[in-house]
Length: 232
Image 1 (tube, rainbow, N blue to C red):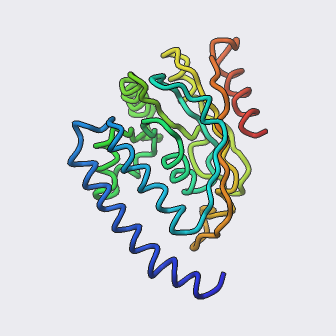
Image 2: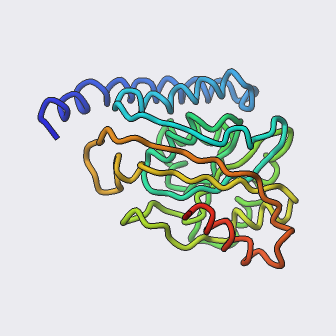
């Protein structure tokens, strides 16, 4: 990457994004009573899209027609990069709550904003706390509010998809909610977990048709089917 691009990313794009992040966090905290409103969601989506716009990362999406209005879903996606978050937050056309690791909730201001927005932080190191987090996200899934979960649990080291954990599928199974698989392509090339700069590489998000997990004999069979769809 040229020195000019590096200087742009650190001296222009990054300060603007920090300012936007702080502004969005403050607005979210102040608007707790309206956390599921369309206009607050629009502000948050603008914040997420700004990362792709300012780093010149083109995003394309197919499959939005599979998402029904007023229907709550459990969305599950592969996890390649921090840009997975910006892509889904910016271009998935629903109000949803993230199921995220507890460390995010500990970030000053940003973590407070995540909690104010209704996102659920999971302590993966303690089974009881993790179960309580799953129960908390279940309470949010009403009136078209959905959740997005990365069933791998963490970003890929190599870009290859890892093993899926059970939590997202248990929520969908228990509540009788459809799951929608999401495939993200290009995010690893944009910024893998060890990269210090952003590469302007195209990202594509594919939203697949919804799936009723109860058509399968077990959750384990459903997990395998969903993983195969995302893997392609």
